[in-house]
Length: 431
Image 1 (cartoon, rainbow, N blue to C red):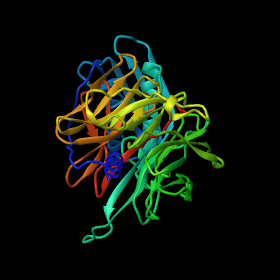
Image 2: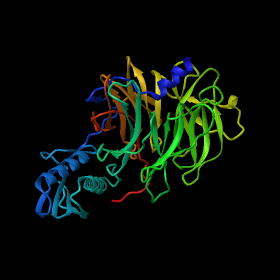
Image 3: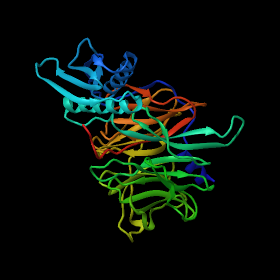
Image 4: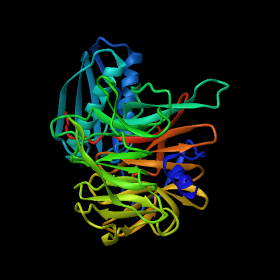
């Protein structure tokens, strides 16, 4: 009974939250002020109201990139967009320098769903021009939305959705009759963009791992083992699937070879178990050689790191390293793409908050504070941004933050409880 309750804790979101979340920074970095002027209209074919919508999207992008904040009073950087016909150009300048840079040829269609993606690309181009690094605006996220099956029903259904990183262009991807949870992108080779995803669905009664595509939403079931299969995660190299299964009678950690073209290959291999304990929420290191996961093998649920053992290695030979020591009920770890940090959720003074374990500093520090349970953190591809869900007794929404800013911004709204965000691992940039 305890193991079932523990497993439920690992996969279910909590019931509290707030629209405004205060971020406690361990090492705060000052953001550079940037003057973003309204789009200059030079005989454009788009209405002034439409241009204001584009202005708002670009303002959001530049105000949430983790390196600049829009401030026309004391700018370090200046951005002046100009629209001629349906072609947008950007003039970029360092305030203390006479050197200017132009970005031309951003074609707009008049369709906001398509044009907001062009604005995201423009924001990433600005970021790269000023900082020499790709931005994260032209990235996508996955999440689930849970609703009651009917106004008077006690039954729930949750489906997988995709959206832009800021919550725009939300699109439902699955149409099941049960609960869907923990979606995750499948990484693809350099030069391509992920479109294949895995998730868990309870449609048959027991949780099983399914796959679908953003492109055509064709659904296929991947696991046919006995028992429950939960919390799938794919290695960054795309060749291993890690998941939790109780096929042996206990929720333990398994891996299996995987191909995005052929699916699961060979047989699943149990790589960690502990007597009378449950494991959960695996996450791969960037090199695919380690897993961080949750276990209550020593009492409360905590985060451990394990070198993936060679086939035939005895569990008795394994000694996973404990990294979360300051709190209890630690869940849902997420390894940053640069390998330097793990984000996770932990009960702190009675409330679930997002914490960070920093491998460089070898210490844990608290990221979020305030009323409301925050869970299921996921890293942006720049290892600076994070998404997580925060829940109230009646709602659950997604929030965006980064390690350089003090507040988190709600990016979802409307019907349904949004949970289990997953950020796209970008392998291709169009800048």
